[in-house]
Amino acid sequence: MASTETRESICNMAMLMLGGSFVSSLAAPSTPLQRQLALVYNATLKAELRKHRWVFAKGWRQLSQDPTWSGTEPRACRYAIPPAVERTILPKGRDWTIEGNHIYTDEDAALLTVQCISSDVPIANFDALFVPVLAAAIALKMVEAVTQSNTKKADVGQMYKDAIAEARKANAFEAGSDEVPAGSWAEQLGG
Image 1 (tube, rainbow, N blue to C red):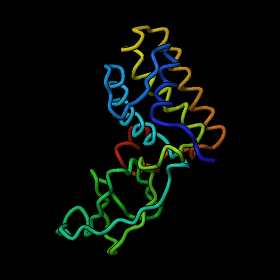
Image 2 (image 1 turned 90 degrees about the horizontal axis):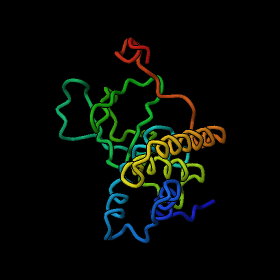
Image 3 (image 1 turned 60 degrees about the vertical axis):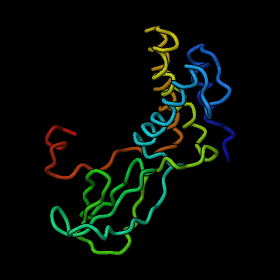
């Protein structure tokens, strides 16, 4: 079912959590609050999409091999990850490495098909349980500017945790994390 939310309605949910003023438009922000929300919205959206494998934002992309890559270290082939891809889901059993905005591999193919979490999903496709997560995350970033209240920050932090728990219960995102390669620094640290 399509969402009827907008950037403004999601930001207004955040403002409701904080007891702040509503905004009418973020397209051409004219007040300090609108400018702050416009700044925070995109960064928070990208961060929240990156944290979990949200089902609504998951899809497949075909990446073209980089013809300018010399084919030397670290791998023979390089594929550029598009800017809207917030998280690449590496397949099990494939020898791929992500460094910066590229996937490196010794698999030589004109196109590399990868599964990813993307931020170019229209708001109309947002999962109904993602919207309160995003609104609470925005509220957490705005709480100091709007309320200067540590109590309110704690309250909104709990709202965020509750929204994540609800999304998890409904399988709005896949549980678990990406595999940690054997022998990696993260594995050695217990990650």
